[in-house]
Image 1 (cartoon, rainbow, N blue to C red):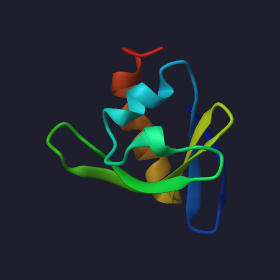
Image 2 (cartoon, rainbow, N blue to C red):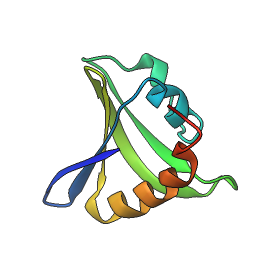
Image 3 (cartoon, helix red, strand yellow):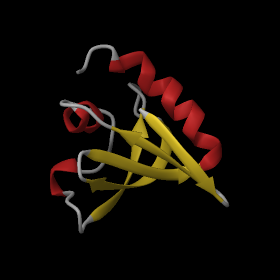
Image 4 (cartoon, helix red, strand yellow):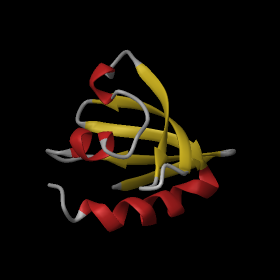
Length: 89
């Protein structure tokens, strides 16, 4: 996971790797298989109990899944996903 420069109220989180889509699909409310270089989607990341951790807009750019969210939610989202990413490639 990588963070990118924030602009105004937005922060960006990039997720890469062989299983990035499979990993994120387990925690998001949107269908990541519909993304391509011309299509984005709105979604949310939810915890195991179904409570929303963050809402975002996600786009695929080459091999990166790029999530745009409120900049204050980037760090908590990384913390949340880091607990589970050790089980993915």
